[in-house]
Length: 517
Image (tube, rainbow, N blue to C red; front, top):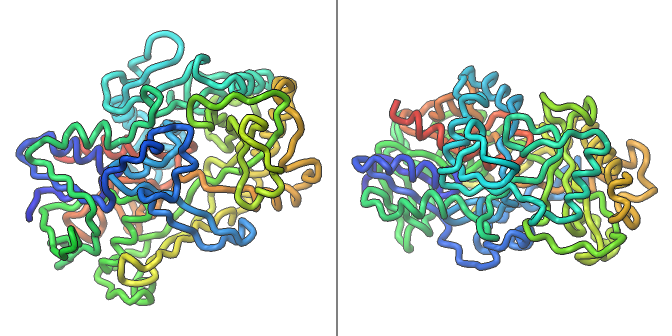
C-alpha cells in the first residue's frame, strides 16, 4: 500500500492536516490511528470530562514519582481514537498571548511562529459565537470548522459570574475573552461546545473529509516503528487486523503527540544513543533532544470552600473561568502571564487531599484552582524497551525550579485573596483547603506538593528550533531524515500560558498552508 503522505495519528493535529492536505485530489493521503471510533455518550457531556479518563479511549499514561510532589505519580490522560485528546480534554479554547509566541520566534528565528503570523490560522480554524456585539473579524473567525463558544450569563454559573465581579472589585480588568492576544484579566472560558455537547476535532475536520477518494483513514492500527534506510523513511511497520505489514509513502508526518511521537522515534532507533542502547534498541540516528524539554502545566486542586448557599450544577464543563495574572500586580493588562486562578463549580481536590476535603458533595462546595502558566522546570521521557508494550518512563520533573515554586505560592495567595473577598461573601462558608494551618511559605509548599495535579498540557519533546540540537527544524522537518515532518504539541519549544489545544490546531493549519511552498 503506497501513499504520497502517511499521517501517523488522527488526533487534533492529524485531523487538521489530513483535511487540508487531502483537499488536493491528486495527493494520496493515508491516516493511521491506534484507537477506534468513540461512541461513549458520556464523552459528549461537557460536565463529565474529569470522570471519563481511564476508559478505553484514554492511553492512561502515568508519570514517575515526582520529588517536587512529595513522591506522588500523576495520571496523564491522552486521547486514543479519532480526535485524540479532544476526546478527553476540558474543552477550554485559549490561544495564548503575544509574549508566548515571542518565545517561539526566539527559539526558531522564524516569524511564521509569531502571534501576528499565526492569527490567520487561529481565525481560519474557528466558528466563533458569543460575546457582546458583533464578532470582530480582525480577531475571530465565523466560517471555520471548529465551534468556539463564549458563554454569556444565561449559561455561566451564577457563582462564576460573582467570581468575575469579585476580581474586578480587586482591580483585575475584565477582558472580552482570552483570545485577543492579551490574556491578563478576568473573563469566562471560551469552549469547544455546540448545542450542549463536546465537539472533537475529528468531528469537524476529519469526518467531513472521510468521503474523499484520495483519503484513507485506518483505525485500530498499531505502529511499531519507522523503517529507515539512509536519510529516508521507506516504510512504517504496523499491525492491522492481526497482520503485520509495512506501509510505504513518499512522506511521513508524525501527529502522535508529545508522548507518542518521541516514543515511536526511539523505538525506530532515533534519539539519545545511551537511552536507546539501555532499552535494547540499535541507534540509527543520534538526536539527543528526542524526548527532552518535557514540560506541562500544573494546577493546585485546590483552594476549597464549603458553600453558604446551594451551588447550582454547571451547565458547561465545571471549570468555567480561568483568570490570568501577572506577578507584577492585579491591574496589569499586557505582557507576560505568570499565574492563573480558575473557578470550579463544585468541590475539587487531588487524590492526596481526599480525606482532608471532608467529603463535601456537589452543590455543597466550590473550588479555586491555581497554577503557574510558564513553568521553567524541564523533564524528559524515554522508552524502557524496544516494543510498544514496554511502559514508557515519563518524568516531567515538576516544581524543580524556585521560579515554579514561588509562582505557585503566589497563585495560591491570589486564589485565597479572591476566595476571601467581599464579592464572594454570599457563596463562602469556610475555607476547607488549605485551611488556617497554612500560612508560611514552607506550609504553602507542603500543601502545593499534595494539591498539584496535571492540567493535561504536555509539550516540547520534539522541540522546533534554529539550532542543530533541536530535533525539529522551524519548518517542522525532523532533522536527519529527508521525508519526515512533525506537527503537534511535541514541537512547541515553550508552553503557552493557557491550554495548548488551540495552538496545536494553529500549528497544523499553518503547516498545511506552507506545505506546498
